[in-house]
Picture 1 (tube, rainbow, N blue to C red):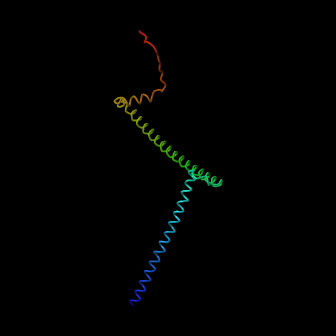
Picture 2: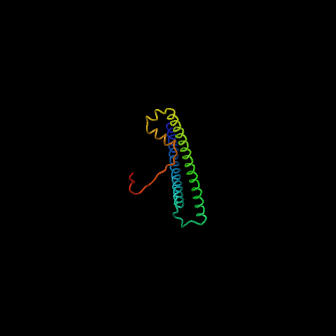
Picture 3: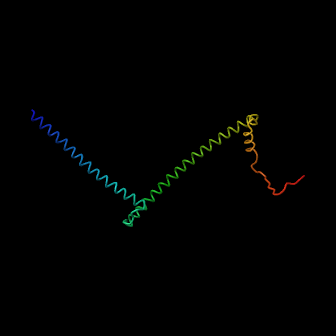
Length: 146
């Protein structure tokens, strides 16, 4: 019985040790693969940045140029979308402010006695209701005596 337990313990211990060794080897291999991928990505980034192009063939440079064109096109499309979104937001805000302004103007016109109590509101109303053409004159010299 003791011999059986000992052999069972040894086999379980050996299997566990083998699994750990296998796991370590797998992790080492994975680390090596990741280091290789990182190096390839760094080289690719340098090439896309215009560095280290001396060793590139014409085909590689053409591929890099095509990739940059696709990237630039994507960036421009996103930029245009953001501008369109911002324009729509500002137009909605403009409509809202115009509606609010119309309501306030209607309120001021409905209560003409109150608008004179607020000279600024009356001035704004008088400015908005009269023509925007203004005649101005410029005179250089001494004023005429009457």
